[in-house]
Amino acid sequence: MTNTATETNHKTIERLVKGVQTSDGAGVKLTRVLTQDLQRRLDPFLMLDAFRNDNPDDYIGGFPDHPHRGFETVTYMIAGRMRHRDSAGNEGLLGPGGVQWMTAGSGLIHSELPEQEQGLMEGFQLWLNLPSQRKMTKPSYRDISPEQIPEFAADNGVLVRVIAGATHGVEGAVNKPDTEPLFLDVHLPANTRFSQPIPKGHHAFVYTYRGQANIGDVAVDDRVMGILSHDGDTLEVSASVDTRMLLIAGKPLNEPIAQYGPFVMNTDEQIHQTLRDYRAGHFEAAVVQSL
Image 1 (cartoon, one colour):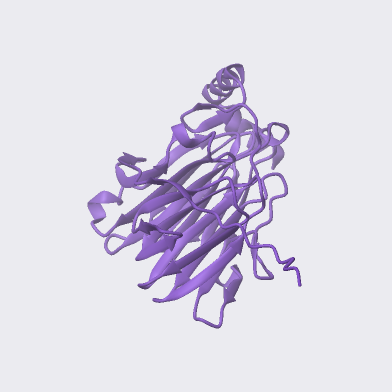
Image 2: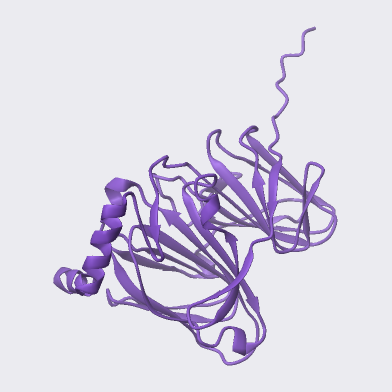
């Protein structure tokens, strides 16, 4: 009898990245894991910052008023509390397990300031690019409470919080058709495994923030990103110790990227126009006119 079963093609680790220690905002210490030189390789993702500080001096200044245009920010809090305010009149308190999904679009000004003076502040901010036809869309903001994030619980004790995309039949809190992002927070007890299909052609990476994730014969340690190979259609991950990791994947836009600080467009001229608009106060003026 001929065996017609097709063996699953597993993804492997192409590269390990420890990120760059830096500070942003008013002196918040963080690790820039996805840096600008990786934007083409991990398109549509532009940046990933990870912060884990229990010294208030390392986070108390927060991120005062600053502008954005042309992309989306996804902030996921593990511990601590951060207050969001923006020029469109939105306000929200981001606490442990919650997500803030903001579409900067045509431009807004916002702040993210801690509402605590002691204790651990831990979380992530991911920048997700917008396609050229949506870069000037109206800004929007969504607070997603921990209770609004669906979860998948496997028989072996693995727990997956499904922020965007889907896993094992569980649809996430967010769906974005342009980039089809997958954003999973995977909790693996010791000596467990987890499997996740990833569409061919999508770019994907993992970031371990507790323990050690094992993919093939490569260990992705705490505070390390593993870029997943182009080949393969399934991620298989195992853990010998209690482990937590982010799994992030998305459909590349394959468009030019022009970035100047907090502005991400497609051409240098669009960046110059963005700077003119910002200096002229058009970010806030456009918002006021739309209210």
